[in-house]
Length: 425
Image (cartoon, rainbow, N blue to C red; front, side, top):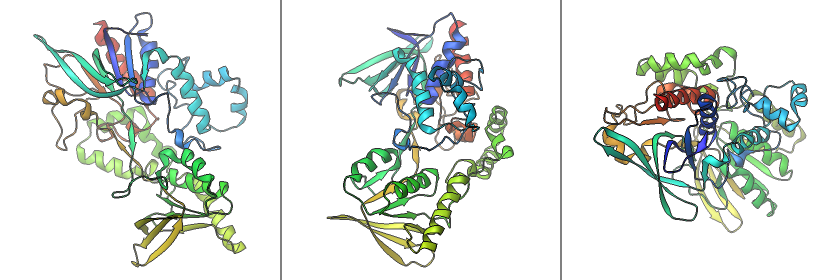
């Protein structure tokens, strides 16, 4: 693959794991017939959940679900090739675990990204994509973006792949501040506030990020109280059993995509415990055991406020005054804390926000969403001759794996095959 000038074959919005996997797929599928490409990434450098690269934290998926292996086990961009290049292959095997450290997997992603650095414009924010019409219909797309120097520029492309990622979601009416932050910025904010010798934290949320934040704060600040607030009765364990994990198999996407809407929704509801608001069993048990030991010793520092919500937050000269309301009794508990950590999830960027000029050509579903065909291509009318593909947004059409790493390699291969076939034909 080569970086294009003038008109490129493929323009990509975002350069996280999804479009990185696509870059690798196109490079291998195209072979000796180069495909020109240019990706636009708003971050100043490659990064994937940097704020939660907690020391010792592991991935929740096998290393075999890297960027390439499920598409091409012999790819030079595999996690195993990365380990060999770093001189750690034998040592990783000896860990007897299929789950890499999170910092290690991030280093792997950076290692692959280095191979495609010449294709990426970092610090470039895409503002719109406009159709370029001719007698035959919409032949090209103009990608309008703001470059790092603040100038507005345009890249023309024959095809577009949108993988715009996610945005941190704070609770309604709770603005971010130096004492209120999302786990997306967890480690930098913890490093900053550590200089103030904090004695109390509140962590809001019931998923993996919340549990990891609680564990980290409890270990790093041995004199601090750590309060966990969530609406559930307790943390729920993630379902990573073999039968449940079949929902992430490639053939499951075929069955999901052809199913009626009500069946799709039932499948998402049935298997939400594989991903949403759940915690790895080992971490869950570790937190419970730690809280129990502290009760026995008469010095509890881990405090769990279940069936509860944060009802009010007030800034004080020394920190925050946080009112925690019991949903069962209606009573309130006031916690004086130095920080409120919100592990409250993310909102996925709707690809339609980039496509204003194209939306008249794109029929929407009954919930106002872009329609995606099985190959992740946006359904358009016949006047649009270029391909518009979306990664990471089609959970409603392609299933739970769409927003996760599990099938990134397979999906990238499907889109890569379509692109290469269209460009060669």
